[in-house]
View 1 (cartoon, rainbow, N blue to C red):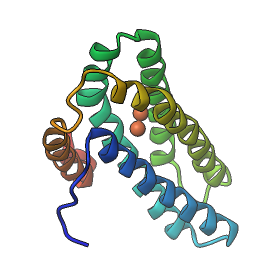
View 2 (view 1 turned 90 degrees about the horizontal axis):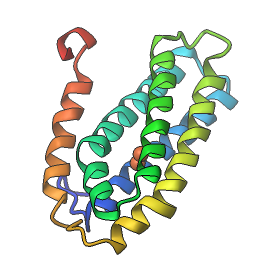
View 3 (view 1 turned 30 degrees about the vertical axis):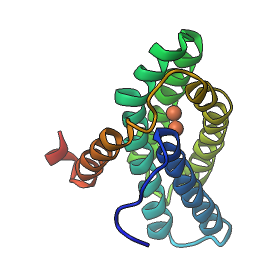
View 4 (view 1 turned 180 degrees about the vertical axis):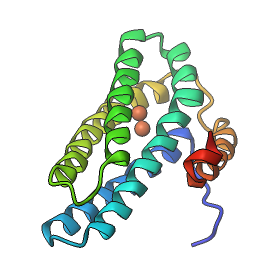
Amino acid sequence: MSDKIAFEDAVDLLDADHKAVKSLFIEFNGLSDDQAPAADRQAVALKICQALTVHAQLEEELFYPAVRQAIGDDALMDEAILEHAEAKEMIARIQEMDAEDEAFDDTVKELGIDIDHHVQEERGEIFLKARQADLDLRGMVPALAKRKEQLQKKAAMPAKAAA
Ligand SMILES: [Fe+2]
Ligand SMILES: [Fe+2]
């Protein structure tokens, strides 16, 4: 696999994120079932939090505004934003939790269920409507890829430096 992955369009790029984070949740559930050491569970959970933070910001900065304008469905987009806000709250909680905490695994799993639901809604409604709309989804790929790289670098920095 090469470093530069070519994406068909914006939906393809964003859905690749969904698939990547889904495999991290599957990995986490496996570790949880095996009662893996806290450090291992914590590492995967933090990867999940980081990936979702970058993904949500990417959608909110670039993809959602363009889709909102093109499809004119404010209620649908407002609901997606609300779900992001709920996910961010849970992400913040997980980032502050210790994996030794007995509620840790359940909180991460709960986030996984919420994200599954959100992704189903994106695929079934937002992505569908975006593809039907008069929107240059192919043309959005370079800007999305560039911003994603910046956000990933920022997310990988220690919290203080990233502020
Ligand atoms: Fe989203
Ligand atoms: Fe998404």
